[in-house]
Amino acid sequence: MNPTSDAVHHDSAASSQEEYPGASIHWPRLFLVLLRATALLFAAGVLLQAILAGDFVTGNVELLQIHNATAQVLGVVCLIEIVVAFGVWRSRLTSAWPAVTTVLLLVLTGLQMALGHDRNLLYHIPLGTAIFGCAIVFAVWTFRVRTGRSGEVGQ
Image (cartoon, rainbow, N blue to C red):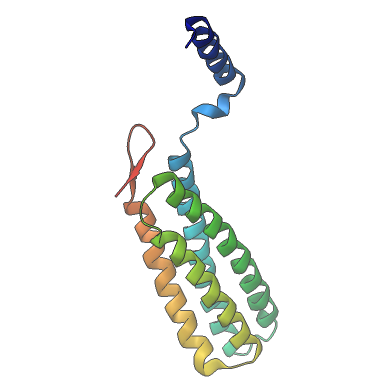
């Protein structure tokens, strides 16, 4: 190998790092922060759903539309959470269970929406409770994961 070409390659790598400041981003840490945010948002949204449903049952019929719209927003939040969970998994090169869990939450959320549209409260209410429990456990887990100084994620 030519020592001159090595020097040129090294200089071009250094200059590209100066040109692209994003090269110094700690992706595992960023993905973890985003996963924490989406997990908290999803759990808070599921809690809001329970509050809206409880108020609807007492006779406030207008809240059913808000309950439906909130479910749709939760579906979108869950999709974002899946992308971020896959980012955490791929940047860590470890277990895929957070990514699989978020996919499962999306499937359960879709089933929950279908049961709600069918007014099948026999399954809709317990499934909502189960989703809330899973969302809380998942959100708590995201705060138990730590990152090292290098930005690598570890448990």
